[in-house]
Length: 113
Length: 116
Image (tube, rainbow over all chains, first blue to last red; front, side, top):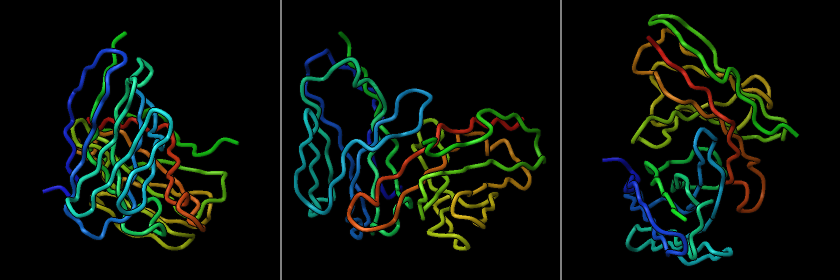
């Protein structure tokens, strides 16, 4: 079983919808949780970062981490066609292992206008 | 500021050939890594480096070699290419210094490799 599980979708929603993306993980040593966004034929870009459990909000995006359940979520409010991309969750045990990230499979999101 | 630069962007190899994928960053980042991305598999860590002269294996290291002689460069070598190595390869770097932002990985644009 992969350390990080993520439903690959695809997920299709109308413009303005609330989108919920989720990952589960098995390694309790993970402390740093990230969401990356990847547009077609591009490299991933960091979207949200959360340390340990809790919520973090940035504009239309909210990241949640529940370490007790080993579950993280990304919520997108008022989704826009420009949000159409693949969303990858990523995790690491320490910040010093900055690029030794373990990724989920990614969820492909399509927002229609 | 170019960020992370990968060359080549596309490559076709025959089974058994060797080649080196190049990765260079101009952000003076300590940490660099290589990932491969396959359909339905997400990104999987191949090798990573926390500084010049220091490398370590990731999730899927077999068939790949790396070295880190300078801070700027982190080449990935395929010694004897196999069709199973057909993939999109991404190089990433991060600063590795102070604060939570050191976990942000900056990715290159990728190298699309096909082994026939």
